[in-house]
Length: 284
Image (cartoon, rainbow, N blue to C red; front, side):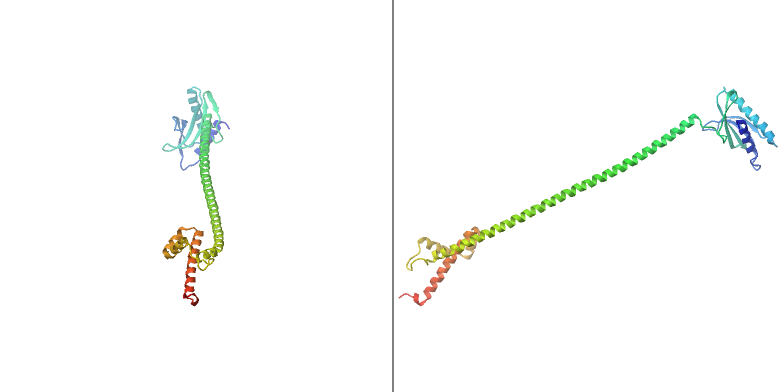
């Protein structure tokens, strides 16, 4: 089907489409992208137009369009045939193109213009722009997600480091506490061992000191030396508070010796008092 047949089909369809809203005219315009376009001519629809009359009517429109195209210098021209109701209200339109000197340009199957190179480039640019916008949005989404996961990983790593440090500090504190307990046990053991040794030494020294203080190893007529008398007199003069104050400044072995000395003096006094109270000990 050539362009003239398509134009006839469009006009015939519009004329017989409805008797309730009959068409008043067809307007031939220059088709301009983005606006209405300038009017070339207007064709009133005759009354009682039949099928044969439509063919002649359409041929007149096509001839007028071709004359206009030839008059514009032979360049490719775009036209639109618009069906108008009463009151010049625009209705359906049919777009087509004509080359000067009568050369036709094919339209698509629906009577619409085929895509032009400029239109295809514009559509491709819009497609690329949408693709770039989508890729940018996805890149931003991935970047935000990766940054959030990196922040979470750093926080988890920091927490693990802190937990490890706390564990090492707790382990070190346990080791120190264990070492202190071992040292305390060693001190206690050494003190017990020293005490045992001092007690053994005291057991060996007590009989000697008692014999030395009481004079049991001397003859009955022997007397104490002046030094021993001074020691005895000093020990007897000590009060309980003085004895406690002195013992606090002495070492354990010195405390044992002092205590043994006091016990020896007390034992000597008790023995002398017992001998004086005995009938055999009375003097003549």
